[in-house]
Image 1 (cartoon, rainbow over the protein chains, first blue to last red):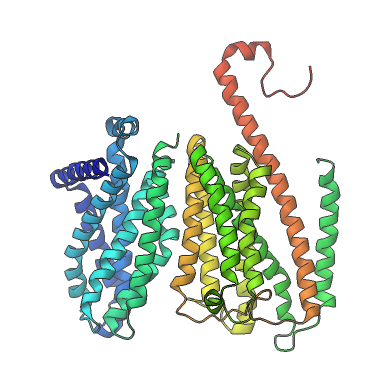
Image 2 (cartoon, rainbow over the protein chains, first blue to last red):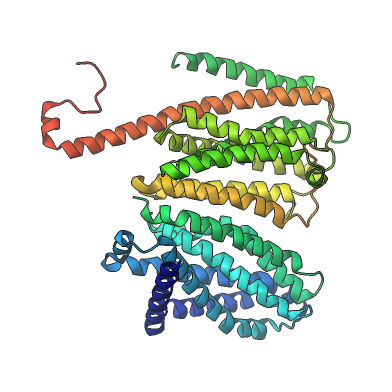
Amino acid sequence: MNSLWAVTLATLKKDIRLEWRSKDALNSMLFFSLLVVVIFAFAFDPLAEESRHIAGGLIWVAFLFAAVVALNQTWARELRNQVLDAYRVSPAPANALFLAKALGNFLFVSVLEALMAPLFVVFYNLHVLGPAWQLIPIAILGTWALVVNGTFFAAMSLRTRSREIMLPLLLFPISIPAVLGMVAGTTAVLTGDNPAHFYIVLLLTYDVVFTTACLALFEMILHAE
Amino acid sequence: MKRLFPILSVLTAALLAYALYLALVVAPTDALQGDVYRIIYYHVPSAWTAFLLFFINFIASVQYLANAKPSSKTAAKWIVLAIGILGVIASFLPPVQRLLPAGMHPSAVATTVLAIPAFYFLIGKYFPGERLDVLAVTSAEVGVVFCTIVLVTGPIWARPVWGIWWAPGDIRLTSTLVLWLIYVSYLVLRRFSSSAQTQMLAAALAVFGALDVPLVYFSIWFFRTQHPQPVIGGGGSMDPRMLHVLLISWMAFLCFAFLVCWSRFRLELLHREVEEGHAMESLAGGAVAAKGSLPLNRSPQ
């Protein structure tokens, strides 16, 4: 257990340091989701009342697309200089690598969300009618739901041809219940029409089920040769 | 076995024709919907067949993953056995029965639960090693075809009866669509992945898909369904004459699916044999090629 956390922390630190110096993932995600926001704003020209109903969907679709940009880069970085092969032969637990990558992605996507959320408020003239604090658990659980499966499928698509295209093809069908929970939950809070508790429970269930599945199967994916 | 194939093909063709005749001529016209309802004789059997095939794919995938290590192989056997026993006991307990939809018999649930260990052990016995993976590909491919039939015939029926092609947010429609999407992505993964690791990756994806479907179902629990109630084991009721036609139709579809699966299974086996042959050939190098006896060459010389 100790070695698991030690390796996780070391890998996470390395990833954060790399990201801090290059800012590859964050910059591309930020600019990408900014573009999505602007294009949607032109396409819909939303008034305040309408926008409250569609904003939940727009926000999460933008973050979903942006997250894919970051997720595609996570493992590609390890392919250079055969880092992944070195990891495979080392005695370090496979799940530590997975956890570090997932936590790193979670951190990057969370930073993106924190930076983009004010922009959404500005562009769509949002003001929340329901209990606003519920957006925080929805955001945390929703981001983890995207990132944990995304990290897993990114590792999976690493072994395929044209891996950049493979990731969304694998990730989106599986993510449908999570996206539905995030979108419907956010809309419920924004409009204040109905309680969002059901969606928080749904996201929590999704997170628990798929985190367990990822941890159980990751070693096989890493060593599948 | 090979001689059985043409006989079975003829039988299936006859059965399909007979089912079509029953569906179009013999089955009584629905009092409310008129003749439009007759599409269920294609829609429902396709759905049952598709779900059965996806179930087989899931079982084969789990078993493929479990067989990777001897320890997990034994563990999986006991877990599956425990699921069977506990499931049957649980389906007769009062608190669980309250959760079931009205009109669903506990014995129907118990039978469904028993199918898990039954299929697991049968498939494990008759499809050892690499054949498990071949079975998984076969069932996924044929299942996607049948699921496509379901998704095409559904809207054709819904347009005149509901007035809309598609009911967004409907529990059964959405979960079938998501199931279809997951299995299409499964097939895409198989196509795009290089041959050595495909099996493991695909099996893992199949497990993820199987975990996803109950969550999809749960996520749209909120919305009521427009879809008619299930005919068997559920609250729906049906004229016994119609049910009879439906079951014969299902028989025909099952035979057809079996036939397609069988030939696809053989094709996939041959395909792998050829690939292996090519690999062996390039390993052996020029020496084998010079003698002109490829490891692939099966004809007696």
